[in-house]
Image (cartoon, rainbow, N blue to C red; front, side, top):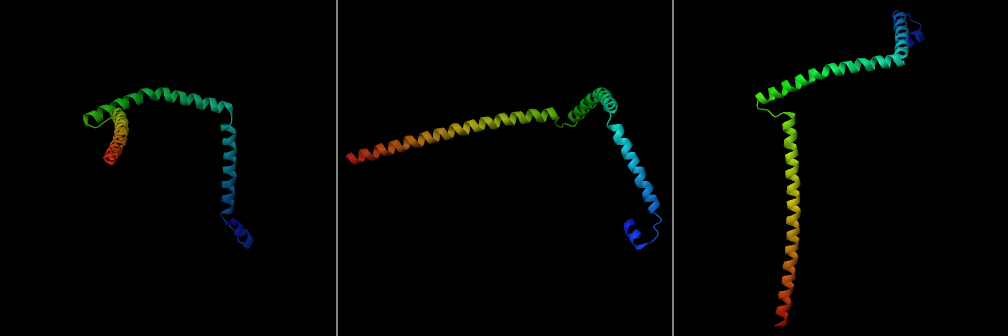
Length: 128
């Protein structure tokens, strides 16, 4: 927009503020890039993260146990309950697949036996 106003020759009262904003943002950007790119900044962030994680672990455990207790009081399943149920359902599904395969095998064997018996009866009748 400021380019259009320069082209037409009009005075843009906000151009000075836009230039100040752009200059300030450029300076802040350069300063932050220089600061964040240093090894000391990375070490400091690592130490802060380690401290936060070590301090938050007890709170996480307390929240987890409180959530588990609340779910038990509400007769709702916890994450462990759902995981155990999923494992049991997977085992049942695998057993059903095995049974299905065995039944298919028995059916195929029965069909072969029936076909063999039918051929044998057919040849006996031909002999008579």
